[in-house]
Length: 297
Ligand code: NDP
Image (cartoon, rainbow, N blue to C red; front, side):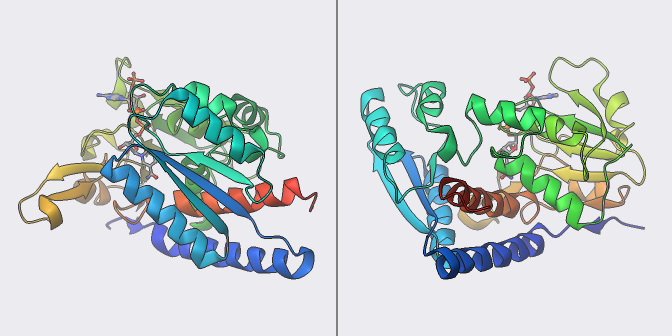
C-alpha cells in the first residue's frame, strides 16, 4: 500500500489558525501586538520571495511587521546598526535576518548581535544552548520545530524509534537531532545522524523508523535506502530545470518521491510538506517572543 501523505499545508493552516487566535487574544486581553522585523541584505530572488511570504503571513495573522531591505553592497556596520536599532525598538519582538547574506556580511556576527530574546529563528548560541538542554524559555529553530509538529499532529510518536537524520547543518540537521533525542513527550527517539563523510550511509538509513532528509541534493534518497513502513520526512527544496515547469524549473525534494512513497508508511511531499510548517513556527515563535517580553505566561 502506498504511503499516506503528511499534509504540511493543512497542518500549517491549522497552526496559523491557532496563531491568529493567540494574536487576537493578546490584543483583547493585554492590548499588545506581536511585531516581527525581517531584514533582507541584497536582492537574491529566492530570499526576496521568502521575505515577502513572511511579511504577508504576518499581515494575515494580525502581527505587526517591518521589512528592511539593504543594498547588496551594504557593510557589516550598516547591518549591525540596523540590528541594534531593532534590538531597541519596543514595537519589534522578533528579528530575522534572511539567510544567506552577501559574502561581505559575517552571518555569525550578525546572529550574535541579535538580542537573544528577539532571536525567533533560534540561531543565537544562547537559544541553541537552551534548546539542547531542554529549557522552555528560549526558541526552537523553525524548520526542525515544524517537523516535530508534523510528526505530533500525524500521530507519530518518536519514542523508542530509530530516527536517522541525513545532514548536519546548524539550521536543520543538528537541531533536528537535538529535538528528537530530548527526554520529553513527543521525542525520546534513538537518533543517528549521517552526512557526507558517513561510510555506510544506506546501511544506516535502512534502519530508520523515521528518516529525515536534509541534504540539498535532488532525489538523493531512493527506495533501496528506506526500510519498508518507515516514516519519511523530506526537508529538501531543490530547483531542477524543467522546460515544462513554471519559469522553466520545478521544485523537488531530497527524496525520490514516487518510489519511496511506494515503500514508506507516511511521507511528506515537496512542495507542501515541511516548507509551510517553517513559516508557521516562525509566527509561533514571534508570538512567544511577544509574550515573554511582556511577561505574559
Ligand atoms: P546544508 O547544505 O547546510 O547541509 C547539507 C547537509 O547534507 C550537510 O550536513 C552535508 O554534509 C550533507 N550532505 C551533502 N551531500 C551529502 C551526501 N552526498 N551524502 C550525505 N550527506 C550529504 O543544507 P541545509 O541543512 O541548510 O538544507 C538542506 C535542504 O533543506 C536544502 O535543500 C534546503 O533548501 C532545505 N531547507 C528547507 C527548509 C524548509 O523550510 N523546508 C528550511 C531549510 C532548508 P557535510 O556536513 O558533511 O557537508
